[in-house]
Amino acid sequence: MSAVKRGREQQVTHEDIEHIECLITDLPTELTDAQRVGAIEFLSRNLNIFSKSEFDIGKTHLVEHRIEISDSRLVRQALRRHPVAFLPPIDNYVQEMQEIGLAPNGCQI
Image (cartoon, rainbow, N blue to C red; front, side, top):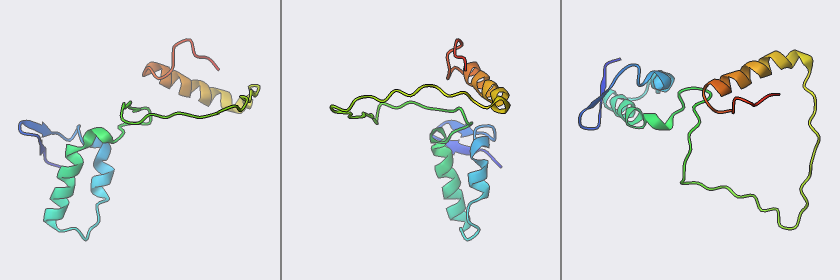
C-alpha cells in the first residue's frame, strides 16, 4: 500500500497504518475507486482513534463517569481463588500489563 498524505507535510507510511489494515482490506467491494480512496484517507487521518494493541488504552478528559450510590451500603465480597490451571496465563497477562505500565510493578495475584 502506498503512502497516504496526512495533513500538509506528513506522509502516512505502511507502519503507521499497520493496525488498521484489516479495516482497509475489509472495505466493501462495491465501493468505487474514489470512495475507496476517500475511505482510506479518512481512516489514515484518524489513525489515533484506533487501538494498536490489546493494551493500547487511552485517556480522555471529554467523558467523566460517576457512580451514584446515594444511601446504599457498599457490598464487600471476599476474593476468590483462581483455578490452578489459570494461574500461569494470569501471571503472564499481569506481567505484560506491568511491562507497558498499565499495572504497578508491585501488583501481584
